[in-house]
Image (tube, rainbow, N blue to C red; front, side, top):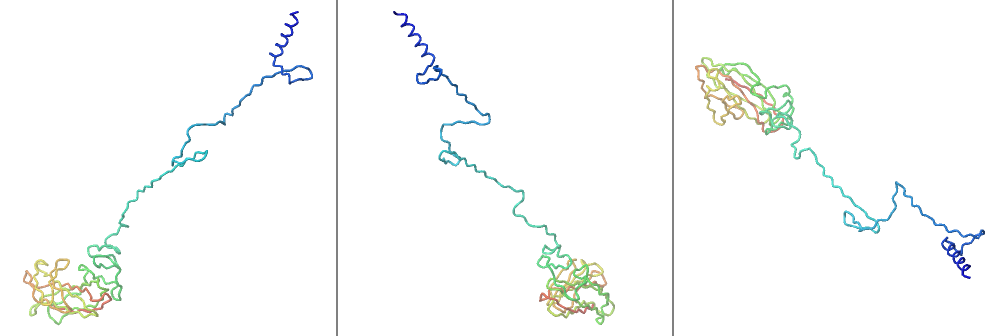
Length: 268
């Protein structure tokens, strides 16, 4: 009776191969086993995952718990085209607080120690264009009769001010030419006389200064003498036969840096 046993064994094998679970029953009495497939979907814009590997360190050599921190340091070097050690604004000679322009300064300024500075403005000094040899105030012409004189009044506006005067001196028969100057002033001043013979010019003029004065040379190379308030130049010689002269008088260097009034009388 072997055939019924073989049929039963076949039925049992078929049931096992079909995935029948004895614990899973239904009203139909049929047990169904289903194999499921898990589908993984990846968003193109998002990547999810865990990366393993050596623990990174930051650029400054530190590591944080579970996090990597990167510290970036940027060094900026600032450069400039501006030069260092500048000398300041350009200062033209003759202007205020600038070097003198050949001993001269712009209007209202005085040359003191080769520097143009604001000068004193004194009554009687305004409009007095006699601060240089070339602009000397012309007092006219006199002969060598001592009774004939030229006179002038003026003001020195401080220690740096200079005043110039000039006159023409004629050598006439019966008199001796000897340029003489006398100055009275509110403070001590220096007085200079420079002479130039009509014949021979400054080069042809010889002069010996009197005692108490010093030999001097004007900016125009006229020979002369500088001294106190009163002195006479009696020892001079012209290269020609005439002693007709052009005399220049310079008054400067007051003893006080203030407005100094003065008066002068000159004769030949």
